[in-house]
Length: 126
Image (cartoon, rainbow, N blue to C red):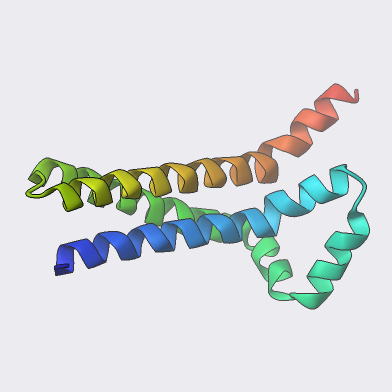
């Protein structure tokens, strides 16, 4: 595995990790409270106090995550344009696209829960 492959894999892992952290700080608490599990949210926040910091600075968290995901998409597209020399590289590229697609879906769900869910809920309860 060369340096280009390692950089692409590292950016994919970073994007997935940041998308999961973004979900943990914003989307997961909203979902748990909406199904009546507010005490679970309180327990998790008391056990993991850094989640409060992430929730307070969710703009920075989502901004960094969006930048890493955009960089990851660029790396994967660049790898596809360079062409595949062997079957193993084609399989790895396919898995990288799948992981990146899942990471992007998780990120978009977290952004929706963090920024759009409350206004939509308030609009329906008028």
